[in-house]
Length: 198
Image (cartoon, rainbow, N blue to C red; front, side, top):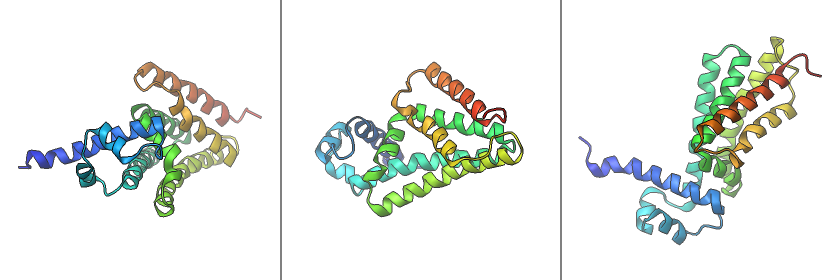
């Protein structure tokens, strides 16, 4: 049987990730020093370093964790939804749900990846690229089956940007806000995917 201390490790790590993300989302990564970070998390430096070797490791973990989650969900959607229209709706719905549930973490991921050292940044960007590739493949499949307009990388970036930047205004405490956002975005997806559009 695991000791209480062992069981607390993942919980404390998650608490650090969530607390740091809230602080970085509000102030920015570079504006938050180690003293402020540890004070906000109610940790000594030694306790912090027990979980993360550095502040950069913490930022990388925040960015990787949620892009890995999104990529996993997208891969499952691709495997389970053969219909491009239904898959596109599912991809969008899942993205909004994750942003709504983890707005601070996704805000940090979208805004602060540039703050990572090059090798760390490239790893996170590779996750972004793999995730976006599933959206691209879905749009191309829809074009081939005649349900979507011809693929355009500009349309792909516009669609993803619409979802990504919802973190700026979506209310994570309101299920109606998340639901209404998803419904509105689905209507936009329907418009851009229709063959009747110019």
